[in-house]
Length: 476
Image 1 (tube, helix red, strand yellow):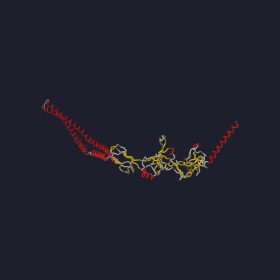
Image 2 (spheres, rainbow, N blue to C red; image 1 turned 60 degrees about the vertical axis):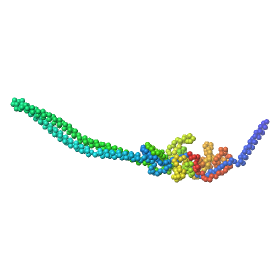
Image 3 (cartoon, helix red, strand yellow; image 1 turned 30 degrees about the horizontal axis):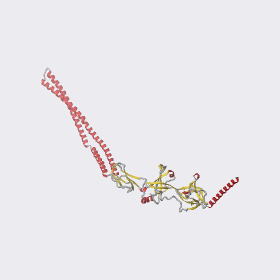
Image 4 (cartoon, rainbow, N blue to C red; image 1 turned 120 degrees about the vertical axis):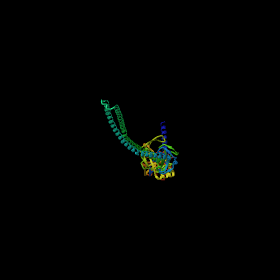
């Protein structure tokens, strides 16, 4: 029983060894898995950043109403070429002409008022007349004063005469009659009344003199006041002249001209109508200054430098692609949600067309503002790099880059170090030598050490950057 078990085990072992020997013999004499292979070789390679972009103008010129007014109908349409200084829009001329005439009339009226205010000939005559009144009134006052003094003396005499007559009439001698006494009494009353009248007249003349003395002062003050009115009118004249300048400036601005040679990008107003100040009418741009704006990822833009060469391609560009250079990189980034809903940090980068290419695109492709394109910005280049197809690379243990190299009819996993990399090719800085065979598209079932039959694929040209002639998809 024991010997039988040993015999069974020996048979099983013998069968296993035979199967292994058969497998080894079959594998040794098998032609191996058929694979394509390419040779690692020296050639040019460039590293680049590829991104969607859009055409734009660095500056546009907006024609807007300088003030409120009625605008004429605008005949210019989008795409119409305009030259510098060409009239592109204007206010209704009669409205501005009336405003100018009104301002001029106000100035003429104020000038006439100033001239009238400056003429004081009548007032000067009145002042001379007032001075004569002062002189004649003073003479009249002097005369009334002399008359008052004379009346006073006459009154004193009549009083003395009445006293003498009364003594003679009432005295023992009765030298005078009663009639003489009555007459003397009448003279005294008459002289007293005359004296009081002279006093009233003299007081009245003094009052008249005081009033007359004020006439020259009053006339002088009136002349001075006319001078103040003239100063006010002169200030008003300055204001009116400024108003005229404003109206004339509005009249000049009312004829709106194109500041540059360009084309009409937008027409915001077409029909005649009254518009408030600042209303947009037209937008004019210079197509020969067109550039491209791309929003690059911050991880990509760090390798981009000003004046880096750029290929601009896509359906809007056609064949061949246009050339350009990096003109400006914005100093700050911004957040943007990608088509997959992922928030990304991006930086605006401006690309300038080569003038000849832009001229060709404007003439042949009718390239416009806001067109979608793609840009490929070259960030590094080598002329004699050892390159292999990028599709040959894969990540190995520890994240190392590896590929399958064909040696002695077998596929060997080879660790490599990369230099420049683009969409089609990768530079190998260590791990391969020129002429080594590499499997460009290894199958997932391929294993290290497996026998392979390599079909060598020769490439017709040295590898460079991938050609963007046909673009991708719809250029978005």
